[in-house]
Length: 185
Image (cartoon, rainbow, N blue to C red):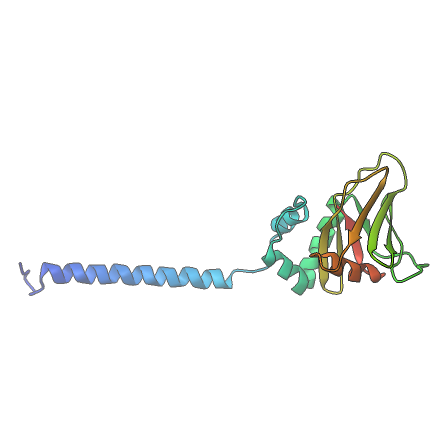
């Protein structure tokens, strides 16, 4: 079948299909460009949920990368952590002895005990009835790490820090720095 101008119906169908495919391609490219241009900085809501994540929750690598590379995002995250943490310590005590400064973190005293065979993190409650933390998060020198803690026994939490375990080596390095910021979660 041919219309007045000599075009077949099949030619018209092919032209419309080509035009429709072109529009879909242009829309797909526009969506891809918009996604690439979207900010990679996590929103405050995402940071809030990440700060409140439960123990053993998986890390969000996009948020972790933003916290390490963007000072403003890291500062915002630490501010949120201060609001949800059981305790916070911005600096170690001035009169520190040994390679690890002792700290007062809220109602807890934190110290690192080095034995010839092992290194232990010891958190001791200053008073009875204190809610024990389930994890410790440390920030400093562009690093951050969260390590799960063992349950409290008679007001004390003790964990052996092994360099081979994920996060333990980084935590030991950060605990040596009196300027590292600690959060008990």
